[in-house]
Image 1: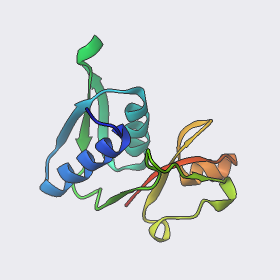
Image 2: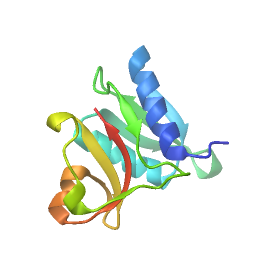
Image 3: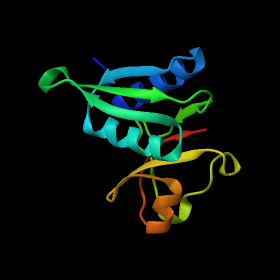
Length: 126
């Protein structure tokens, strides 16, 4: 059993990208699907879809070649970190993305700053 599903998601994406896999399958949750949808929209993943029914649901992620070079988890279960909208800055001089869980849903740092909402800073990806 995994205690931190977000870390499990991003590490599986990073590891699969580093070994050149085209697809990753992991247990389904609404949070993981929302994060995957944001990563698809930002161009880090080619696709994300739910497969299976009831207790056997999985999330199938289709990776892009070389899109993910590294991922760093910011907020962890033992240490939650929250950020105000004024404190959201670009990652890697605009080359990376900051993923934030806000009251408006899962957003990138740029979207959260435009909507003037803060929240829990989940991870950064570049």
